[in-house]
Length: 287
Image 1 (cartoon, rainbow, N blue to C red):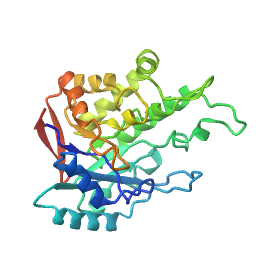
Image 2 (cartoon, rainbow, N blue to C red):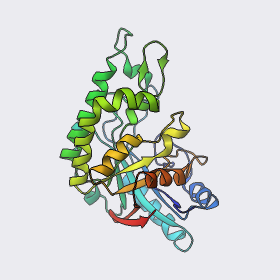
Image 3 (cartoon, rainbow, N blue to C red):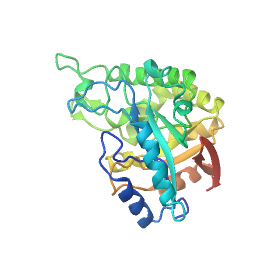
């Protein structure tokens, strides 16, 4: 493996994950990784779910525990401490100084998990109270408009995570819920949302931030990584350079999942380097 790091994964500190941090490090070593960054969920004001899940990270315990883990492995494995910050327009101000309030973080992913008061992961969120489907194009539009607001009004992050996350779960009114395929995205959605996505990417670049290639969609049944290659090309063409790779693993099986393929994808569209982070500052590594 040339790229031997995973910069998006979850542990026992995320409310939707029970994977032990020691098992994560052990498995990462067995898979040939030399470094990883824990990025557990912190989603302020996450909406109610059937499972009553809340994504409020115990940040003090988290940083203390991972700092001790890093010290234990300092001679054999490189551990970085990150967080996946779930943002909505309504929480930008409250989270704007998170890294200053909680020293010890190396890396922050900014992610959009909620639109119109719901996480697209939950099928019921795509329906009205009477059982009819909401207009998915209105939801997609709001998703990207909210993202544009976030990048224009929030700066305490390093990369934007899985920018087209919502397309994992878009509804098909005849067949129920299915993931958006490469063909559907290219022919239908990219032309429709290209302008707002470009504005988002321009703002990210102007603010010195980056994006990630997230391979989690590949083991969730999609036929492309997040974000779609057309978004990656647009980011590159606009001058974007900061790029990380992450599996979004919530279990041991998917740690480091197809990271090398993500690197090959980046190289194929002329990215020259990828990034790791320490103390919220990027280091560039040749691809």
